[in-house]
Every structure is written in structure tokens, then in C-alpha cells.
Length: 310
Image (cartoon, rainbow, N blue to C red; front, side):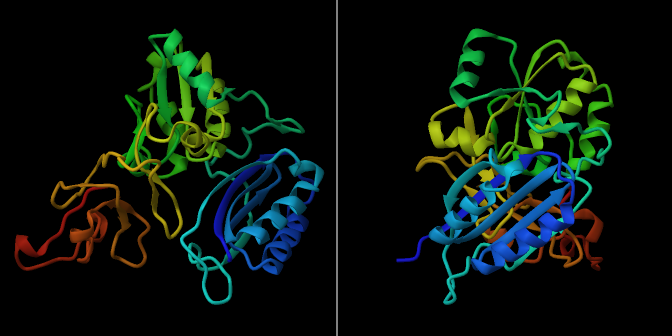
């Protein structure tokens, strides 16, 4: 029986010819019937692919044969299902692109990468090492490395959530002075699978944060060990057809619907087809067209206006 799976992975390493890597990766993934997104830059690779388990295993095995990617960090999760052609239902297509950055912080010139990965980043902490740090110090600060909307449905308890609509907002947030009081404290950055924090932690170190850590493998790796019985609370937002993941049967719904305030772990896009803004909305309210403030339809009465500030 075909088993649907999703694999999330990244590797930081200098790449002399990103376009050649793109063509190889595109042909490899397509030949195995995989769908998803792969980004490549001169600094490495970052991807999320879905498909049949054995096909994904062959992809991983082949990709690891390339020296720069031999230590890539792969994390596995359950897929929604496969169509009649054996392709994942979680992604509509395969997209393989070359970009200036594999995570778009808007600072390609700042990142330093060598054969061992990111230079000058935070100290990696395995999930059990994170617990040891928290138990031994009373001043540990969790710093969310994702977009703020993701934190609305799940986050580490007591985490600081920067005001970020996109990853590019982090630099202005760090330079705003709002977090200067954290520069002498132990700061643990975290994100979905770890790749964003590889860059974020290095940017923080360059801006004077003196004790920076990053959760190795991100929330996904942490949840593999502790589920929802540890320091993580709520659901994990993901950018595929699943939309969110829960790590236990009793996951708390931290999100609050923008319309009715009902507890929910659901997010959705603005109903304007050209808009990529997301907000929290429960299933009942989500059955209607809902718009962010920038694409608010103009009605004749206040009741005809649905306002969701992002």
C-alpha cells in the first residue's frame, strides 16, 4: 500500500553552480513523482517535498550522495494522501527555483557559509539540551523566528513574538531597539524546521546579542521527542494543504478567530485572490469570504464590511 509522506530539509554549504543544482534537483524530484518546493542559492538548499514513501527515500538517498548535502537535516511527517497517479495531495505542483537566499531575510550579503554550515550562528540545542538550559537558568528567553501569524496558533510558552508579516521584517525588528534588553540574556530562537533560525541567530549575533541559541531541528524535531507534553503549546502552522499539525490528542487551541473569537488552530488567506495575507479564522467563519484590511470590500452599511487587521 502506498504511504504518503512529507519530508522537510535544508543544508547550508557553498554551491559554485546553483543553476546546475536546480536542474539536477528538478529532474530528480520529477522522475520520482514528487511535488513541493525547493529553493537553491549559492549558500545551500531548502525544501519541502511530498509523495510516496519509497520515492521520497530514493530522493533523500540520491541527494545525500552529493557532498555538499551529505549532512542535510531531514524531518519526516505524515502526508494527507496520494492521488490516482501516486502524487501527493499536499502540494499542487513541483517548484524548483534559484534565489539569492534560501530563506528571504533580505540580507544575502550578510550570511557567511562554509563547508560546515552557517558561520557565526547560535549554539545548537537538541530538545533535551533545551530543557536542561531552561531548568538551570531563570532568565532564558524564547524568540520566535517565524511570521507572527504562525505564532498565533502555536508557540513556546512565554515566547517573544516579533511583529513580522514576512521574514524580511526581522532585520528592522532587531534594529528597532525593542529587544536591546535581551542582548545580555540567553535567547533561544526557534522556527518550524530550523532553517530560518540558522540565519536569524547569525543576524542576532552580528547585532550584539551575546548568548544566542537555536533549537536544533526546530519545532518539528522537538515535537518528535516531547509531543505536546513539553514546553511547546498549540499547533504548528505549515505551508501545504495540511495547514497545521498537532502533536497530541489534547492539543490546546491557542488561536482566536478574528470574527467570533472562537478557539481555533485554523488560518486562511484573504479572500482577495491577489493577496497572500493570512489570519486566524474558525471553520464556521471561514465558510464566508473574509478579507484583510487592505482588501476590504466597500459596502453601503457597516454590517456589510468585514474587517480583519493583520
